[in-house]
Length: 180
Image (cartoon, rainbow, N blue to C red):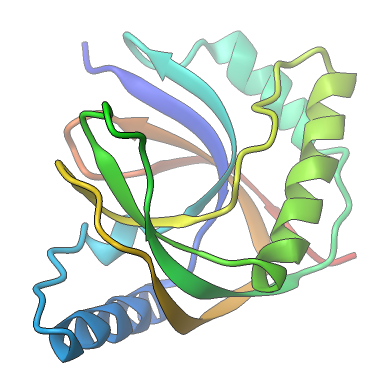
């Protein structure tokens, strides 16, 4: 069986994801670098991560997560990015190269916290302080951070995703409109 990750996320549509990839590639080219991005079809911002499971996520956990998220009422939100950063400490085996931001992602942090309250109210574990970001690729070595303003999108739905490991895809298990 294939291992899976389970998480809540915001995801751009295909056109926005392709635009973000083009802008990041152009910024790299302007610095004489090659971007080497992950496929834009899997671009997303994780809000809560339940973990990695040796097989498909447990149906009871998925059902409980669906019930918890169904209680959330939240408006659509605009988001954008301000920086390109490399995460992971000196001993890390992988260094995610991510788009992140300060004020431009504050609405995402507020949604993450509200979702966390819903999950906790339903007895689910929450991933405290998960910093909103969009992972572009993984590297063996860290790279310097750059200021990089990238327009994001208006997030209009919350997704519960399962990611079968090694297949570079995300399966949508449930979705909720953001429309407060």
